[in-house]
Length: 559
Ligand SMILES: Nc1ncnc2c1ncn2[C@@H]1O[C@H](COP(=O)(O)OP(=O)(O)OP(=O)(O)O)[C@@H](O)[C@H]1O
Ligand SMILES: CCCCCCCCCCCCC/C=C/[C@@H](O)[C@H](CO)NC(=O)CCCCC
Ligand SMILES: [Ca+2]
Image (cartoon, rainbow, N blue to C red):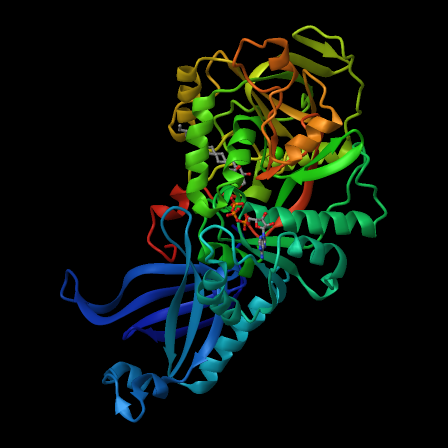
């Protein structure tokens, strides 16, 4: 690495030991200097250096402040602790707060306090570090925050006030906080009212549902401002400029987990403060040339649709509703007939069966390479025939007809605490593709094996009833057409056993339709068309960091 010129270097006191402290444009380092004499061979004594050198990247310094040393030792006139001899001699001090890496991708705020001999030197350190922080233009200064008080275990407000707001204050970030009063409050405020020019980013405190509100609000606003019609499935959408931060306080927190590596409010707040940026793909979902919704994580028909439909009626159970409904849905073992057509992403790097993972986001080589391809050459949309055999190619599209227990499209890994590797472990956050996973009708036992593999090291795709394709677009048509009256029944929440059972009155077979689970929301139609929009939004995150780099080392990193 190119050697950076030093901005400051001084001998300062830290915990009663003398340190050589140095600052350049990228690093703050400190190394202990021993004052004792050491006997070496030949009877000569000379000072020696002890300890290792510690370093913190300037980009991960959160704040610096001057300390009032006197007030540290006194409280209401009563002495709290006796000042050490050495700190008496160094009466001025400043504290640097920085990011410390803890276990399993967690970040924490750590402090180091340096004592100085002279006030002028102390001020020079504080001022120089502040200048370095001000030069970091990617850091947000003003944020618009939406809190869902009812997400997850209903702890959103407490989490924000106790864990996040103090960190934003420390980093001199000003906030405008809105506690939502109803579902879609945040979405509608963002889409129509919010004065977005005043902010450097928007933050949601809640789960995947709240994040989805932010995406819908911001993406719709951006398209409207740029005169883009969301109802046209072929329209190229305009990327959003404001970044979105997620303070996890939901039931699944899949987006946060898959972009940061953990669902931890303090870690997410620190990623926002340091101004991280992670681009992300967004899928648009249409029915008959009408826009339905956007999706960033899972579009699931069959198993995950049925789990969601059942769990929505059990919101009162909190996050446990998914376990209850998951078990119940597994026992019902319904399959659904239909045709899946998709446009394979043939020109890209990477496959859904890769052993490599999307790591440290914007620096992920696959996302960079495929993102570049996408912006140069948006693929053409070709029409397919409807009369097709079980699997065939039509104008670049592949068509597969069958009976499916689950049809899942994962635009990112969908890693979450329930499944730390996710639905599609090798999926990329920002490569312009989604992984289409088709789970055909099989025995309950085999389906259980497939599900359990999401929680173990074994490959969930290595089973003869499962196939996975990396695609740019796809369509699904259920075998039987949905009439308007059937749609009305669905909307009334009634279970629909339609034509398929009327055709076979003696059987107790599957209902004709499942529902699409679109990032945790039920879609009103089974027949949908989906297209991936590469890197349409940006998050305050950096993707999952490779673990061994920091976690084998003490913190701050030893240089
Ligand atoms: N004030 C509110 N009252 C009722 N519902 C709200 C309110 N604010 C937001 N919502 C809705 O609550 C739903 C669930 O919220 P959220 O995503 O925060 O938690 P969750 O569903 O528990 O978590 P996850 O989505 O991670 O499973 C969202 O779809 C959102 O639209
Ligand atoms: C019998 C043992 C089975 C064990 C199987 C574990 C498999 C877990 C895979 C989890 C995949 C989560 C995908 C994320 C989807 C989110 O967009 C959505 C909104 O939060 N969550 C759900 O729909 C909630 C979906 C919850 C499903 C359980
Ligand atoms: Ca993707």
